[in-house]
Picture 1: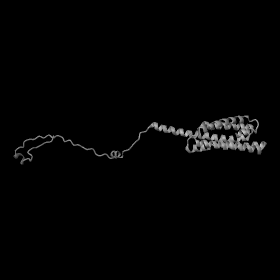
Picture 2: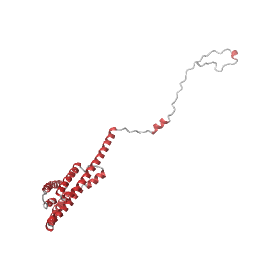
Picture 3: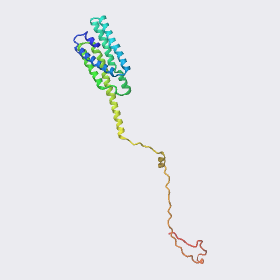
Length: 230
């Protein structure tokens, strides 16, 4: 709405009128959908902000500039106010950039939105330079810088996250078995107990002969037999 009012103070700014008229129409639809489906508390807060900022604030700026300023001074004042609000719009994603750096995740910063805002800032910057209008060109310089920063962060953290996820998938695919060490078995292997030896007796072959006469040995044998082991 402020840019439309600024366009009425300039000449040959048809594109500025058309794009901001379309923007007001789309934003009105967005707000209407939000109010229709929001909770009661959010709906009341939105209505208060609309009455305070979009109607009260705009009407106050309009009346002050219309009656207190004239000619080129009026255009400069309105242009400065538009630049201030435009910088606030481009600086709004700074909170998202902080979240991305803190969490190292680009979940809340879609790349398509950052790319579109950056291209838009570049186009409007060239348009402002062509018209030699500092109020159109300056906020889009900031918009280009912040948009480029968002895309750089997206590429960096998206690549890191993708690399981390691929490494995790490789580890899961490997599915390495768990290895447990039984210290008792290790001790048993280090110092094994001697195996039990079983002695199997061999059979003995005895040949017994009758004792000769006591006169041949000179004395008697205790057992009465003489055995020779085979």
